Image (tube, rainbow, N blue to C red; front, side, top):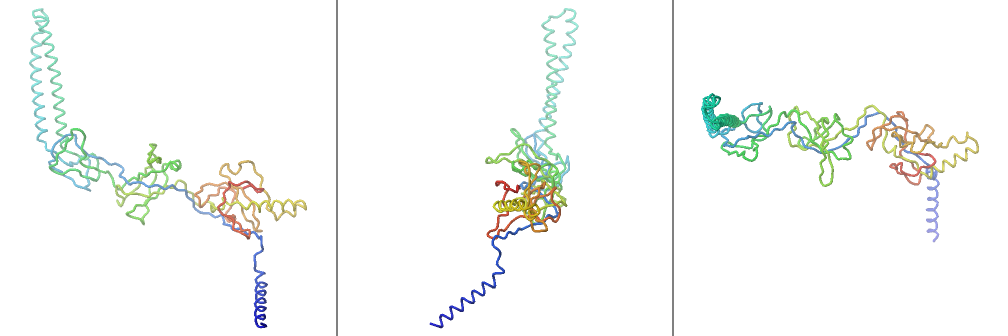
Length: 410
């Protein structure tokens, strides 16, 4: 029994010694500390992301306006072609026959015109002397004028036959590369109702464009000339660069989602980019180098309202004792209504060399969420508060400025 009492007494003594030893290191209840981040110089960007498809700047679908059998095909996929180069040739036999027939019609109409003209010239003097009837002369005039119209019509048919014969030879309209060949030799082409596509030619693969779809919420930020970076699945470790060349006004609605097409010019000297590739783009809508920036959480920070109220009461109490006694209490900031919401002005809290914090009005520039550009109100090296610890719990570093204003407006 005595042994048990001695053991219990010894344990209590050891516990008391440990508590006494650790007491000096215990944090004082209610002590307030602040987490800060320094304002520094750096670069800041604001971006818009979009997905698009790589296309050639100029794509031409080459067809034919006449029907026939493909007699020869002179080019293949990926061939480089020049403007005016022969791509294919249709069988010209029926077209030549039609041309000969049209020529014969012209000759016939010309002979008829010569005859009717001679008749008219023979009857005209007789009619002037009243030697023939009016009806006979009118018939001669009619036949003569009708022959002239028939000759004109025949000549038009001849011209059309010549053009059709020329269309039997398919030429390249531009300098470029054959992207697609849709015909083979011996294939029949029917151009009765629409123009069939024989070849697809793209002009210059060293210059491409990316057709991206930008959401309506972001399209207002996108302007011509902005820098763009993008990647493609074929080269995941490479970043390609370009610039915004066009923002199209035509909206595209898909499943009630409105987007706008933005064209991005992209140089392709190595020809690694191919038509049809999917590109993941980053459009730099705002960029600034060598400017003062701070973490965005510091702009969104607001001290605990109960602590602010307590500090205000302490300051008021100290002021009653004498203005010189209120130096250790953060002063309130006087401002007009909505002052912080005009011209990107905001209140932040900075920590001075004495460990005290005070509110400062700043003017912000680019804000990308994680960082904020400071146009005025701060200098490099200023410590800006982004969190406070009252000893009981950690205050959120992401408080917004939407809460009710305390005695120290923010």
